[in-house]
Image (cartoon, rainbow, N blue to C red; front, side):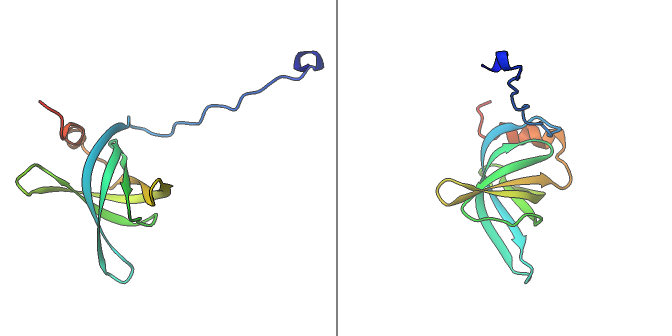
Length: 125
């Protein structure tokens, strides 16, 4: 009936991809630390779901409000040392099991060698 009536079926355009850098899926345990407006320190555990030079997505049982700057600690190995990175929460979305996805941007952007290091954590050489 569409063809005979002169109507054309239109499909929705594909979503616009705004990312500048390629995103890599990963599974890294991290610790996030930030200060509240009352200057209290908060520490929470999370899991990095994917990462790029521009940012990362964290899954956690606790949420950090959009606009919050925080530090991310990633274990360098079994020696108890951590690499600290700085990020800002851009968005928060509910996840299954009373958890939260937090989309974050790095401040400043990651250097390529740090991104490569993060992508290779836990992989066999």
